[in-house]
Each structure stands twice: as C-alpha cells, then as structure tokens.
Length: 366
Image 1 (tube, rainbow, N blue to C red):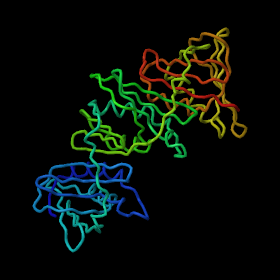
Image 2: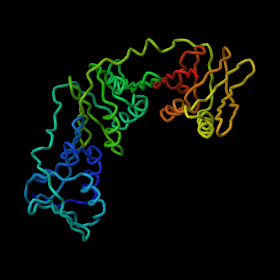
Image 3: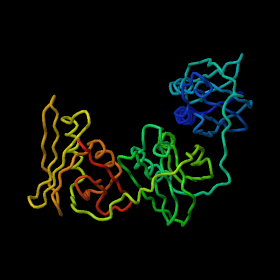
Image 4: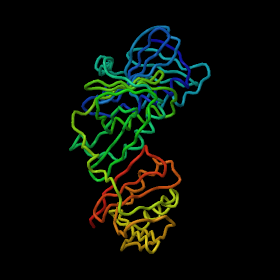
C-alpha cells in the first residue's frame, strides 16, 4: 500500500473514525482503524461491534493495499503533521510508515483479516432528511435514556416514522423526552430502538457535517449515509414503553416563565442543592408566587422568586434539578410552559408555541 493525501481530509476522517474505536484487552483489533487504498480513494473504517463507520476521502494511490493500525496513535500523529504537500503512507517490514511535516512514524500493524466485517443495510425502508435536523432530534432526547443496560429498551432511543413526522423518544422511567421532526414527504416504516450509546456516537461522528442524510432501517440494523460518511448500527430487540398513556392530557396548574430566567435559577440551585439535587417548587396563583428553594445542611439555603404567569391550583413539589435543566437545551422558545396535574404526578415541560418537543419528569418523594 502506498498513497499520498492532504492533511485536512485525512485528519477529519481519522478523527471521526477514531471516536468509534475502543480499547479492548480481549479484542485489540477494535482499537484499530482499517485503511484500504484503492484507485484514487482511501477508505478508513472503525467498529466497536455494535456500530461501524466508513469514511472515504480522495488520495493519490500508487499501490493498493490494506492496513489496520491503532486509531488513536494514527489520528494523534496525523493531527500534528501539517504539510501542504500532503501526508504519505507506505508499508515497510510489517509497519505503516507515515511521513509529513518533517516527521516520520513507523506504526505497528495488526492483522487486518481480524477486523469486523462492515454490514451493509440495503433492503430496508429509507427516508432522506437534513443531517443537522436528525442530530438535533437525537440530541433533544438522548440524555433521557437509561445509563444502564439492565433494561435494554430503556437504554435506547425510540424512533418512529409516520404521519409526516419522525418521532424520537427516550426514557429512563423517571423522565421522558419526545421530539417530533417534520418531514417533507409522507413516509412510514416500523418503529425501531437505537442503542443510546450508538446515538452518542452518531452525534459525534456527524457533528459539523451538512447536507442530506439517508436513514435506512431493516430488521436488525440501521444505517446513515451523509456525503462520504457511512455508518451502521445494530438495533435493540425490545418493546419501548407505551408512553402516550402516561402523558397527562389536562392540567391543574400552569406556569409560563422566561426560558433564561428559569435556566439561571436552576444554575444557582446547583450551588446549594444536596447530593440528590433536590429543588422545591411552590406555585401559588392566588398569591402570584413562583418560588424555587434549595437546602443543604453543609452549605446553606437559597430561595428565588421568579416572574411568571400562573393559573390553577396551588402546588408544592420537589424535583431533581438536573432533570429540569437537561431539556432546556432542546427548547428554542423564549418562554416555557410547565403543566402540573397534582402533587405526586409528573410535570410536563415544553416551549411556548413549540409543539415539536415534550418533556415529562416525575417528582421526588423526599
């Protein structure tokens, strides 16, 4: 194998691919990226068995070939080889020789035959949408997925396409986030569960890209194609909770508050909250009071009154302040609506005039 390519294209491809490669004592090949040179293109691949990515970039290929090397070592070295004339690669004595910017490295090769086969999702249902829109939808809900895999269906992102929308939802049983993305065409396919870890990788790998993305889904896999980046992920075999039955339809108390005021107040609570991040909220429409309070025996206490429009019954409830802050990054409205349905029932949070996002969070018992 022998080729020369520009540093910027190479560095971009390696930095995205290296995000998938993982350190593994049992399977060292998973810490590698696979380089495959053919004609005037080089393909770099990486995989963690659950997810694989393939990125193509142009190169002047003098000799075809394949090499598997440490993804972090190669990516870190190439990022420091700034050379307008390009970075050269060749195989010598079982090592990958990389030269550029006056630097030369000889990087240990791994048996490329052990590298996982990259699956191709070809026969499933497909939709085309803006890659930025897809990332925005995933980012709006991913934080609500469970951090443990004891219940795989909760450590996943639920996706459904139909009715002119792509619906993304995630829950850890204490909160739930739902984002609806309007589609230009009426397309529908079966619901599927994307591992939350894969969603995080997708956000990192496609970050900064623009243009259209083709999302294809079959029974066991899904793929995303955007430009020269192709990604596949396994899907979770499970049943996502029927969350619509838990969504309150009415409201006993409603609060409309400025997005920034609410966010600033919650930031202050992090200074005074206890190990459970408890924040107490008192809403009294008759008194015109929306009060947020936090206490910590080791630090002190904080009380803040927020300007808000209040309707309905008086209510006092406690929440995890972090659970209230997380969804605010997904809401672009200047004003927020909090709808309460009783002292021990969940609150629903959304943006004024924004029907695309809903967030439900359970109160704390103590």
